[in-house]
Structure formats: structure tokens, C-alpha cells
Length: 206
Image 1 (cartoon, one colour):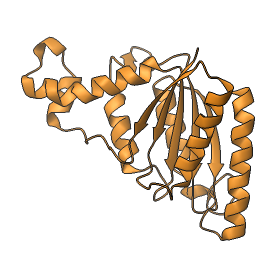
Image 2: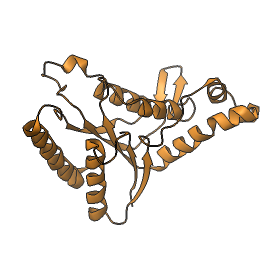
Image 3: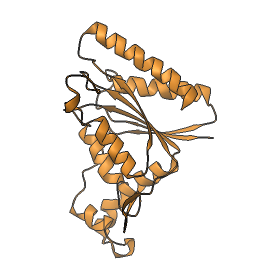
């Protein structure tokens, strides 16, 4: 039995393409794998707070030394990290905002990327502590930013996600891009159809 963590990051509701696609994947995955379990987190509608001074002090000190303020500041981070580590596979829905990720997803990343929990600093450098996991990232992009396109240099979206997940040790990452969504009805329909086909393919191979 596999445990999936499904995370949506779009603040939009029914109008969100990334939500529509992640929900399709999860629905079809559950139909194909009825014994599997899914934990859902909606960062778009319930964003985590930004880290503050108390959080930083708590993250870089022993729990036994935490003040009540620091213990409260780090509590959500502990919960999110435990949730992340409990899952076998991750399904992220991440639209592109201003060539990168939404602020709520960055706030989540800042909560879960923590020394001693998801990465370590060793004599050989950084070492990820999250092992034997798989991630599927479904994106929604208004234009086209993949390699070979005129705006590829603006893409800080996929490279950042690959880098930060890899930093924690998650290197088995697949992307499904729904791009060109603001480039007219025909382009949008074509892109969504291709993303849907890629989802159906991933159900059998991921």
C-alpha cells in the first residue's frame, strides 16, 4: 500500500488548471490503486506562515532549550515535516507566478527544509535526509517556458522545484506541464489534452 501526499498551491478554486489536473490524477490513481491512501494539503487556501525570528531560533537549537514562543513557532513545521516524511509519493500542483513558484509554496518549503530533519550539513557538504520518495509535479503556465522556447531563460519554476526537492534528497521527480494556457483557446485545449494524456500514462508507470 502506497501513501500519497497531495498538495495544491493555487489560490484559485474551480478556475484553477493545476487543481483540476492534480484532482484528475488523484481520482484516477485511487481508482487504479484503491488500497492506497492520500493525505491532502491545500496551501492555496490555507497558506503556512512565513518563518520569523522565533522559528529560526527554534530550528537551530535543541527542543529542550526552546522557549514557549519558540516551541509554538516551530510546531507547524514539525507537523508538516512529519506529514512529508510519512508519505511515499508526492503530487504537487504548482502554477507559475512571475516565472517562479507561488508565495504560499515558498512559505511551505521554508517550513519543511530544516537542518537535522530534511537535510544535514556534513564535512562533505549538504546531505538530503528524505530518501526513497517519488514526486510528480503538475504545473500550469500562461506561456511556454520549456527548453528551446524563446522565453526559456525566464523559467525559474521547474529548476527551483527540482533543486529544492533534490536538496532534501527527493531526486525521482517527474513533471507534467500544462503550458501556453493564456495563448488562446486552441493552445489551451491542446495543452490540457496533452497534460491529461500524460496523467493517464503516469498512472500506469509512476
